[in-house]
Each structure stands twice: as C-alpha cells, then as structure tokens.
Amino acid sequence: MVIPASSTEYLHITVTAPAGVDLTATTPRIAILSMSNRNNPSTVDWHIGDWASPTEARLLIGPDGGALTLTPGDYHVWVSVDPAGSENIVRLSGYLGIT
Image (cartoon, rainbow, N blue to C red; front, side):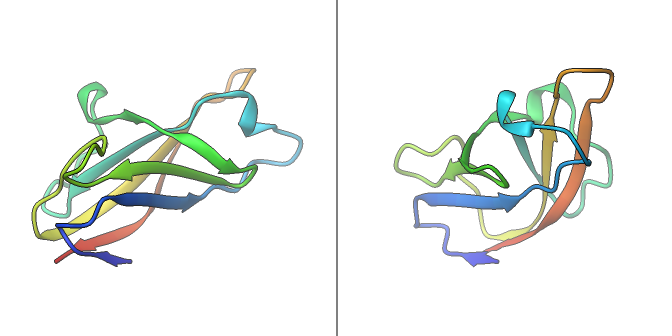
C-alpha cells in the first residue's frame, strides 16, 4: 500500500486468527517501523488500534489527528493481539510506502 504523507486515513490490516480464537475480544496494537529497522517492535513502538471488522484491525495515521505522522519512506507494519489464554500473537503483516 502507498499513502501520501499529507493524507490522514485509516491503515487497514488483515488479521487471521488461529483456529478457535476470537481476536475481537482484545484490542489490536499496531507498530509501523522504518524498513531500515530490522528489530521487532519495542514497547514504545506500539499504538492502540481498533477493529474495523472481525478480521481487520485499523489505525488512523497522518498529520491531522492520526496516531502518528510518517515521513516519506518505506515501512514494516506489525500487528499484535493478546487473546485469552497463553498466546500473545505478534505478526509482521505487511509493508507501507509513504510518498
């Protein structure tokens, strides 16, 4: 996905739950890291998202009230959900280009 740096809009992320796990009972967290950062997100990188649908998390990004404003470049998009039980799921879910 490519988004202009001047745009404020929701970034939508498809999330596939393990069999029998209801992810919507927990709040999704989303991290967006520069492609040059090869590490997993740290605690301060995560932003609270919400569910657009049972399989789609979202985060408002951009200069007009977004959770964060990104400069032009290429980014990794991460999502994390912590459903009831022993799992805490963290996934590299895609790539984002900001122009």
